[in-house]
Amino acid sequence: MPPALPDEDLVALASSLKQRFGDRLYLGTSSWYFPGWAGLVWAPGHHEQTDLSRHGLVAYAQHPLLRTVSLDRTFYRAIDAATYARHARQVPEDFRFLVKVPSEITDATLREPESGAPVAPNPHFLDPERALDTTIRPGASGLGARLGAFVFQLPPLGWQWLRQPQLLIDKLDALWSAVMPALPPGALAALELRDARVLTPTLLELLAAHRVRYCIGLHDRMPTMAEQAQSTRAAGAGDFVCRWNLHQGLRYRQAKERWEPFDRLQAPDPDTREALARAVVAALADGHRAFVTINNKAEGSAPLSVIELARAILRHAQGGA
Image 1 (tube, rainbow, N blue to C red):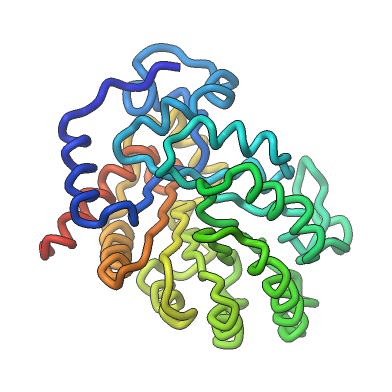
Image 2 (image 1 turned 180 degrees about the vertical axis):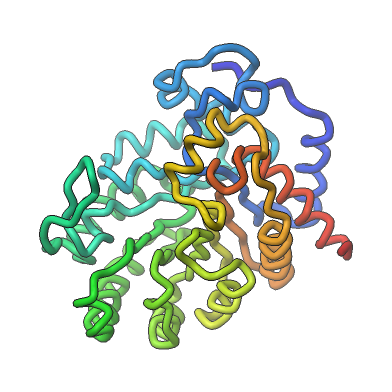
């Protein structure tokens, strides 16, 4: 799969960011298999999604600004160490993966596959041993030094959990106690929420105690970027993790139907982008790393969003407004 021809301006932008921040800034997208990225990530022409899914990662990793990617497919089904290792062999040594932990671990509810309707309580919800066996150990073994973070994204919880918040805290405490010692050097665990009611001082104290990062999840269900940035500080000093998932006011299906094939910015969101850039620069200035992945449903085209965010980060780092 041939990559898009190098853009001199993007190469210069990437060089400027590297000179200023070294290897501590990781920008990327959610997955990589989109035919509409032809001319942006892939060489111009027709590309089948199945071919991109299997062979596009090599070309993706040659883009000057794309130094991480979110493995979203792992949310739906765990993959084995050999598959992780195959991904790792396709990218440079300084590339990092964000791995979504499967929903069989992070969703409190078993769901009907087609509709997503709740079926029954999930007996494996936040099960430490299952998390280790299905994801943490295979991911750490297969990705090695190219592992950036495991992201535990909790879907909205039912009222039984919201009425008894200490139960959730206790389960997360047991989970982090098992997971954190199993991480290889440099790898992170991060918690992303889809229900702002769960974002409490007690939860943030627990994350700080275990050195788990709060992953800012920019999503219609969650507070703004600026509001969530306060939560990263409350969770203690450390690396910055953010997944810009969805444009405010939309659902995934709406954004997909409106914006496919994701070849241009359809709904630029400069307020979110500027707030995100400021938070990234603040983390980098404190000597931490920053991992940011962007979904096509954030503004219409994830690679173009990465470019605009990179420009904003450099501008803020240089003291620009």
